Length: 256
Ligand SMILES: [Mg+2]
Image (cartoon, rainbow, N blue to C red; front, side, top):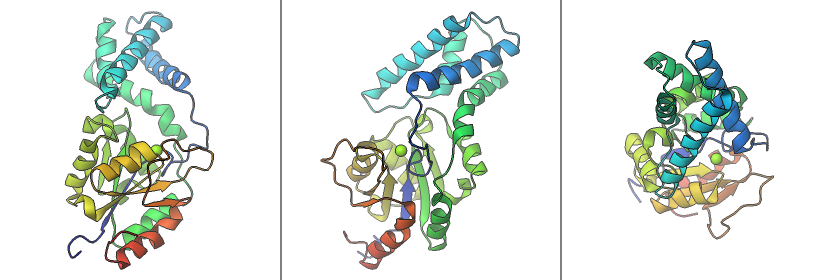
């Protein structure tokens, strides 16, 4: 196993490192809230906005149709592109800076509600101190420019050598391309890497398909779908990770 020793740990973000408190708002509520932020900003800028329901339905319809068109092929939605296209289609001529601010406003509520699991920061620091290379792969409609500010505020951004979001990668988990892009950026092989996530399908099966180990972070209030997917390990807290990874390393990176 020389040269194939485990050396990198990649993480999912939502519900793996971030605590959503068991209460993910439903999609329609969240989508309306985020689009309302954009609408209010565009109106404040003095652009001749249509009534809210016209603006909302145009943008929400475009988001949904683009999401559906991409979903089947594992391609990712990039909300910045959708906002640009949808706002343009309404005949509103925003400057590049105004469009950038629209994206920030659309993301703002998600930024404000982001909270780390209490054991996330100490565990990530402990893994770094033990010499592990850390990475992040997240399915998100927002790009790194949005998420990086949140991660910096939470104190974890610079612990990750690579942070890859589906909006930037073009593909979403479990598509192999997003895992392979992150591994290439980290310059590690799949056999040298472990992925930690809270979904058996997107996270564990996605990691397995490219040859990485997959650890399931169990979410206590959820009944797991896709029970036929068997993770290499299950953890209930992130704090279990350093000892688990040390054990795998001690056995030469062989299967547990
Ligand atoms: Mg997740």
